[in-house]
Image (cartoon, rainbow, N blue to C red; front, side, top):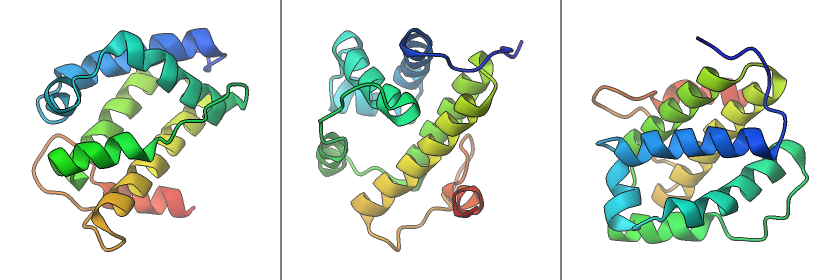
Length: 149
């Protein structure tokens, strides 16, 4: 059942992000980046990423970290591709849609798309293929239309 209310604050973000990262860690395509390559400790990561999303959606938290640096380190260890970012977007959309509906939920999804495209372009170059191949993810090329609007 789809939730009937919008994202309201940090407590909602905590639930949303905990659910998202639980799915992401378990995902066969992107999970290894969290569990094997980065060795991410969810309890350490959650407050940081919650600050990031609280700032992105509500402009209420301080987030002074470099969000790109950890992704660049991951990319150096094991290249991140359009398929990886597309899967991240698919899981993000499904998690947001499963918990919330409203303008901030839509903003969270749009922001996730922009972040995925920006990260891919910075890591792989502006000409990076965003169409992806294989099943199970949202092709990033499809997101160009939404992000251009």
